[in-house]
Image (cartoon, rainbow, N blue to C red; front, side, top):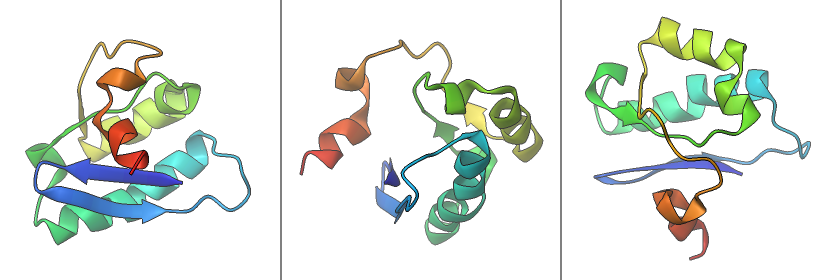
Length: 94
């Protein structure tokens, strides 16, 4: 499952059916489901700061290039292995 949340509320979610997510799948989701969330709240990429952890699919060259091309601003220097700091981890528990 991939999901997102914003200061205004939850965003759209996407179920991953094959059990695996690589950087290509991740950027495909960002290009559709994340974009749908931005559209719903009438935001552009430049209006938000995106946060994800240091999972390899998030930090791959493919993902970094894709995000740069789309103009997605990232929250930098996010600590590895820190689910306690990741707001969506608290949402998943409910």
